[in-house]
Length: 177
Image (cartoon, rainbow, N blue to C red; front, side):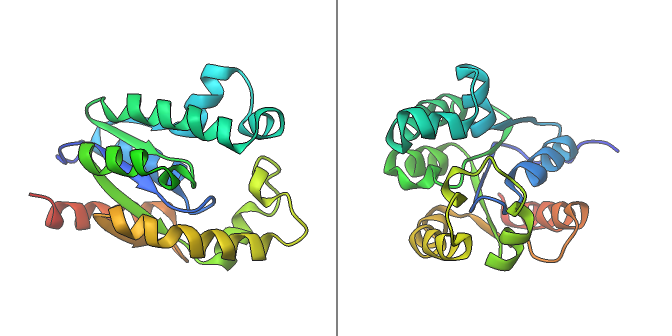
């Protein structure tokens, strides 16, 4: 299938487990763009998992690394970038994402995120006795920030990735200049 003609960068934001990496890979393949995941890029550069960075250096150190990686990736052309769920906490990241591409907020329901992440041990923020309460807290904190910079909001509930990406591509075709 030929790549769709959608110009510019696409930056995916949303809570962990919303589908940013899965949707991002598929969107990049459909549009002929290069895919990046900011968390995977940090892991590649450091040689350790995100959870290890959280454990050894703490969240603040991780967020500093994340800010640097996002600033570098935003300068690239023709990419699809899946950001970490908390990337939008830094005003500098929100500004960079808004300035250098189309921001797509993948909005997922808490029940869906819990189902997608229940066996995933690589989510440091969900290593708690009550993951649902943690996700609800993160949603309350982050949803307004995602909405602040979103050019497109897509609900990721109850859809397979191909259907979701097709719907997203149609939205992008009709919404972008």
